[in-house]
Amino acid sequence: MATIQAAPIGMGQMLGQWAGTLPVPGGSRQVSISVSALADGTPTAVLRMDAGRLHNSPMRVVNTTDSVVFYADKVGCRFAGQPVAGGQRLRGQWQQPGFRAMLVLDRVAAEKAADKTAEISEAPAAYKAEEVHVSSPSSPSPEIGLGGTLRLPAGTGPFPAVVLLPDVNTPEPSTGDYGLLNALADYLTRQGVAVLRLDDRGTGRSVGVPAATAGPQLVADAQSAMAYLRAKSGIDPLRVGLLGHGEGANVALLAGAQAPAPAFLVALGAAGVNGQELLARQTSLVNQPGEPDTAQLAWATQAAQAMAVARREAKKQLAAGANPAQTQLHIAQEQLRLTTEARKRNDALYKRQYALLEIIRQTADNAQAQAIVANMLKQIYPALTSAAAQTRASQLTSPWYRSFLTFNPQAELGKVACPTLLLHGTADTQVQLAANLPVLEKGLKANKQVNVQKLDGLNHEFQAPLSEQALVAGTTVRPTAATDALEAVGEWVMQQVK
Image 1 (cartoon, helix red, strand yellow):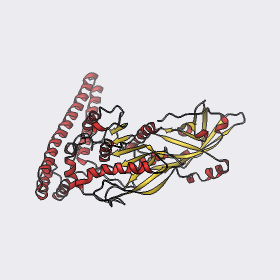
Image 2 (image 1 turned 30 degrees about the horizontal axis):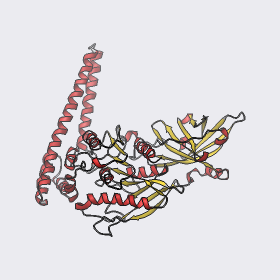
Image 3 (image 1 turned 90 degrees about the horizontal axis):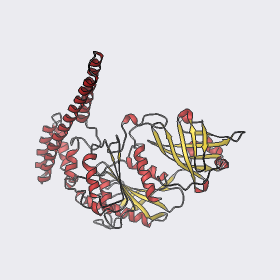
Image 4 (image 1 turned 45 degrees about the vertical axis):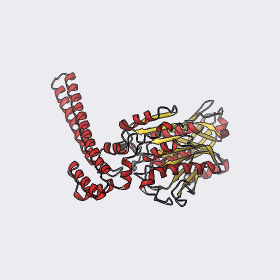
């Protein structure tokens, strides 16, 4: 988090109403804190929020020389903030069990306070969005341009800015349902960073390009987007960076190796190994990107059941007077057996899938390649229907997959010199951490400004397990970006642009 220049806080500074927007999984909530003083001068406050159980909660106020903390003890919430913008704004962290996020509260003018309290859901927008068109001079033809949306924070700037680059193999919707980059765009803009999200090539107002030129073109697009921002009024040209996810992260790294370089670079779930190696190490080639691996889930269920049986047996043995050390040894041996078996299964699958991809790479004739691949898929996955095998064989021999098989992410890493954040989830089965992160670190070893972070339990989309995903009000919702991921990116970016 960026260092905040704080002014001393007096009680008089805090009296009145403060309001802002809290980013939460799946959207946002309007927050208002009204501060007053009791007859003896003791400060007190009331929390108002468009979340049933939190609305109208009393709050304790603890203020020091440089900060203030509001405690809503009955509902387990608190907000710790420091004054910025001449004391007209409080910036800090909202926290409650299982959830925390950056929150900015602005002082509400006295004449507007009543309206703010009555209609908390009508808080002013935290940012404005405008449709833009970005030309790409290095495109094969001038008309191949890009459409997108630029989110600008409230105020006049100049703002730092970042270009978002999607995982091309798993394009996400630009609006509506869950999208990691949408969540990051909303989160970063609320922190004062302008965000440019371009339509994916071949969607919206962005013209498609042939797969044979897609890689170089995407790097050129990233460079063109940065040039657009550097020339735009209200943007600080010296604080323009790139943020990519999956294949977009590798595009960001390649663009970061070229001049003019970005001011900073964020790579989420980037690949370190070549395309063929990456695909072969995925737990199942028959699954669509982001689709649950049913075979892997079935094996995990069997392993969990085996461990449960082992623990029940150990309890029976202990109750019958068995040696505790011996029962613990039995449990450890069962765990080792299952771990060894899982490793063997994964290694065998990797070898079969690598061989399948090698057939594709060496067989130029698509009809011949598809026939061989469909047959191999049926052998590797006996439960797969012939129709499904043929469909997947067609996909695996498409121009995009053929191009990706020869992709080498190591080629330009040594030229990346800007501040770089590498962020990976430990539960990522698409770009496995153990195989990719060490290789990326090695390739970037000459760069002394690399920050490497691993987020426990998060998958390739930087989602927490479904059981841990909930709104502030405690309602489970559809998959959302984990708070830890949003904060890790937000805090690191703010350090670069302060």
